[in-house]
Image (cartoon, rainbow, N blue to C red; front, side):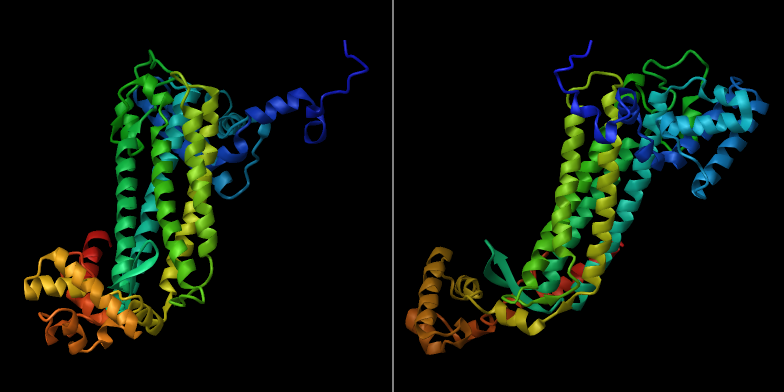
Length: 449
C-alpha cells in the first residue's frame, strides 16, 4: 500500500512518466543504435539460410522465400522506407518481424540452428571488420598528405625540439615523416586486428553449439571469414575484436592529438611557422572521447563470466562512437595537412636561435680534431658562453674567437655552423639531411601507398 505521506519516486516523472514498463522497454531496446548493423545482419542471415538449405535442414522453397524477403528488407532499409520499431528491441527482431510480415511462417525457420548470441557476435564482427578496412584507407590517405608535404619541404629547415626547447636544426619534411611512421604503425595494428578477428562465431548457437548437422565452414567462407571460431563458448562471449578496434583507434587518436597539438603551437604568433584551417583544437579534444570509449568497454567486459551476459548489449555504442569520431578526425587532419601553408623564413630563423648548432661543434672536434667527446662537450660549452657574451650566433663568431677557446679549431668548422649545414650533415639512415629525407619519402611511398 502506498504511503500517502511519502512523495512518489521522481524516477517515474518527466521523460519516464509512462512508468516502469516503459523504462524496462527503453533500457532493453538497442534498435536506436544497432540498426547500423542491418547490412551485416542480413548478410549473415543469407549465409545461414543458404547453409540450412544445402544441409537439408531447410526446404528449397522456404530458403528461396527467406532470401527474397531478406533482399526486399535490405532495399527498404537502404532506401529509408523501413519502419524500425522500438517494441521489437533490436535490429535482429526488427528484420525477423518484417520478414514474417512478408513471407509468413517460413520466416520463423530462419532461426533454426542459431541463437541471438551467435547472430549478434557475427553481425558485430562483420561491422568491425568493414570499419577496420575503412580506417586503414583513411589512415593511408593521411600518410599520402603527410608525404606530399614532406617531399615539398625536405629542405625546409626548422628547429627540432626536446622538452619543447629548440635543440637541433632539422628538416620540416623529416618532422612530418615521423608522423608517417606513427600512422604506419596505426595501420599495422588495424591490419593485425582484422586478421585476428576473422573467425566466424556463426553456428556457436547460444553457447554450446547445436545438434543440427550444420556446416560452419560453409557460412564462414560465405561471409569472408578465414575459419569458424574453434570454441562455441568463446564464439559468443568474445569481444576482443571490439577492444582491439578501440585500442587501435585510441592510439591513432593519440597520434592525431599530438600532431594537432604541434599545429596549434606552430600557428601561434610566437611561432608563426604555419597557417591552416583551424580544426586542430577540436581534433585534440576528440581524442579524449575515443580513449574514453576504450575504457568504457574494458570496464563492461572485465567482470563478465562466460558465456553471454546482457551487459554485452552495451558493447556497440562505444565502438560506433569511436569509429565516427576517428573517421571525422582523420578526414579533418588529412585536409588540414594537405592545405598547410609553411612560413619557411620563420622556421629558418627559429632554427638558428638558441645555439642549436652547438652539437655540431662537438661533433666536428671529435671527427676532425680527434678530441674525446667529453672534452669536446666541455669546449663547446665555452664556445656557447663566448657567443652569449658577444650577443651573437655561433656562426657569427670569427675563427680567432673560436681558436681563443681551443687552438685545434680550424676554418672547416664553419661548414657545420649554419642551421642548414647542420641539418645537411645528419646523413645517417633515418636522419634529417634533406637528401636523406628525399630518399625516405620515396621509400615510404613504396611501403605505404
